[in-house]
Length: 210
Image (tube, rainbow, N blue to C red; front, side, top):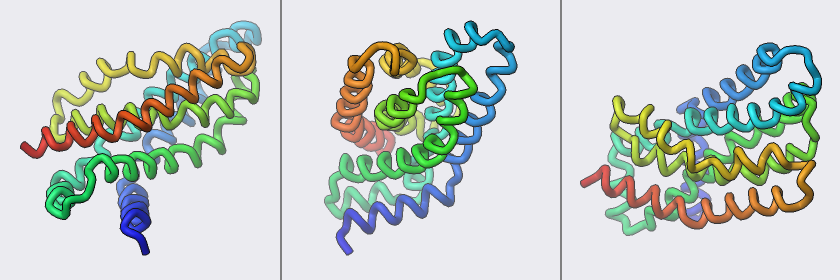
């Protein structure tokens, strides 16, 4: 078994045991299901405001679901072991955030069609959610790395980082009505996050270790 595959399986087992992904997925399902009741039965209002509200709920759920992602490795000394073994910390972060994305994507694919229909939104939004979800998870991963070990400052840091998901909040609700452009922008948003955020997360963890 290759070291990368071993790391992937380790992170999958660790993520399943932590249960943080269930918090984010559960919050997305509960808030996403209750919001139409608050908006009311007016179909026009639901169709106009619903998709944007759903994307906001998704963003908050992702940030809360990824919070504490690196706590176990920080307290157990796993990151020090990675550094001593001369493993690329950015590569470790890429695997960890990739596993976090997989655990988010599975409940998302189950819940998205139902919630999109409830919000009178186009089912093309499913593709938009899939395209944007890596960007949301990897961006939230940087915030999680920065807030690791900071119990009091973590909520404030998450709140301050919410503008980083503005591309998803702006172009996500336009999926299905704005042609191909929203999908391309969401894909670009995720690609740049995948390329940059593992290095930023690694730098944040190194800062925590000093």
